[in-house]
Amino acid sequence: MVSIYRSLFALIAFTIAGPAFGQGVDLADSIKPGDHCKYEIALTVEGKLKVERDGKPAALPLSAKASHSFVERAEAVDSGGGVSFAVRHYSTAASESQVGGERAKRELAADRRLVVALRTGDGSLHYSPNGPLYREELELVAEHFDTLCLAALLPGKTLNVGDSWTVSADAVQHACLFEGLIKSELVGKFMEVKDGIATFTIAGTAEGIESGAQARVSVAATGTFDVAAKRLVGLTWEQTDFRSQGPATPAAEVKATVVLKRTTLAEEPKELNAEARLKVPADGKPTGVMASLRYADVAGRFQFAYPRDWHVVGRTKDHLVLRLVEKGEFTAQATLTTWKKADPGTHTSPEDFKKVLAMLPGWEPEAGEEGPVPSDGGRWAYRVATRGKQDGVPVAQTFFLLAGPNGDQIAVTVLAAIEKAAKIGTRDLELVNAIEFPKK
Image (cartoon, rainbow, N blue to C red; front, side):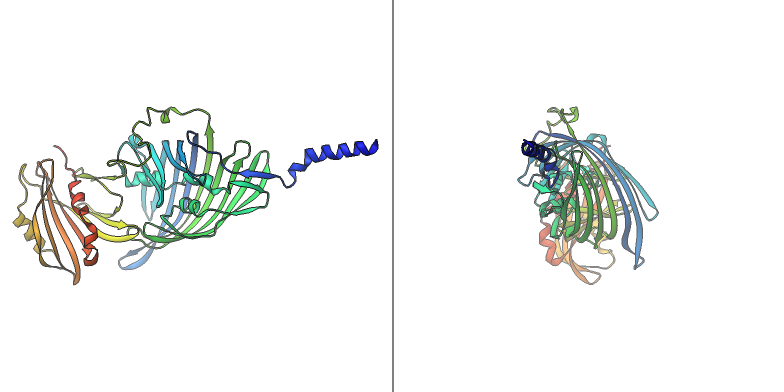
């Protein structure tokens, strides 16, 4: 009889206490299409930008902070467990930064708070179905932590406390905001489970390409996972970046800290109901100018929508400089110059335009082609395409003069190395024809 009681006691004790020893937890996020979550993200950045001033290297101190709060509807999930297509509505998307002595504040416009996030082979694509974003707005919604990859950071299987896993290459690329991944050594580790919350860490290094520049990052992150809900609910992600100079970005050394909170919503928020999503393409892929960016001259003289391959790299009172960067390769540079206004219904003559071109410093032109080019909206456009030497270097330059019906005028110069001129195709003319003048 005693032995029976002892056996029963041992069985009860094992039943009660046994699972806590070496307990396995299924670290797989259960997100599925139609699920809704709320995200709150706080970002702080400290570091320096490396630039040249007066021909000498200089380091500009950089500090920034940003806050984001949005609700998100998962529309599609990929085989790795991550969300591949989502629709968001931001209640908050704002940042403050200081570079050197210059301060800047950014905030997402009220009519652009509905945003689509789509994972692609080149990273994540963000856009508003309500129309083009400013580059600064795109950075606000695309450069906080990529929540689409949260589920993919996990191992997606049952582990015991102390077990480790290699974070997938796809998850690393998206989490580190790389356009392309060179190598990754990020490793996750299951640390503990307490009161229904599993804690894990992710640490290591990775290398990749962003905006045509090579970047090396070091990551130290801690996450929390709700075992019963099967959801990743929190993440603190610290990332130290060493980025080289790119075609459109300076070199930088920065440390960024992201604190993320994720809450599952039981009901569909009104900001993401069927009516709110009417403009969202069924497959998530942008149509028309949805994925374009917008630029507006601060003096109100012109505005235009343009493809994301063009990057604004400089501006003065009368000049705007853009660079065409394709998959990290610098292809061409375009300079927009405001031109003397003509009388309504008239424009500068081609002869006078060419006289100005003949006086450009350092420009030695060869024979080329010229003539009017198609435009619309009562506008007139003239093109002079030629090759020659700029400051002794062989280049191809195309000069455009665009005039509006009210006499507004702007000149556009597109410069490229001889061997890259053919890659421009018709994109220079498309850029020119995208320019809009004030209607009055």
